Image (cartoon, rainbow, N blue to C red; front, side, top):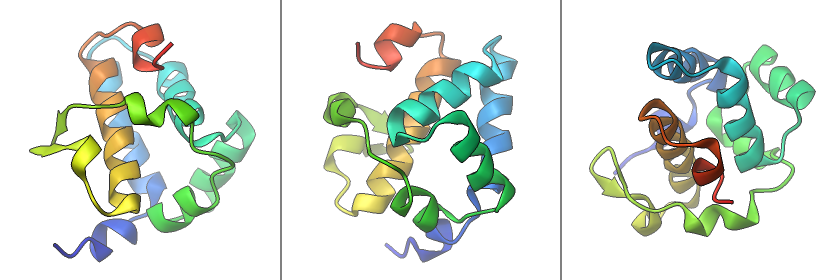
Length: 116
């Protein structure tokens, strides 16, 4: 599967879709940002910089300070694939983020989403 198109997409172009998905279900931008920061290690200012600079997914994850050590606890199916079985490391990180936002939109408690 050729993922290069996805990898070159600007994170800033997908971010509004994460917000819309969450907000339609009564969740907030703050919760979306908390999830993204939890996963990537960015603080709020660094996350905003990534968005403002329109970094693509490759750079967004390459420049992330540190992937959360509990990332291995993220399991399940997103877009027809089990996230824990995705072989491409970058696609797996993107799908981790998709899965977390999906859980938020489905009403899961933040503590469970953040694997506390």
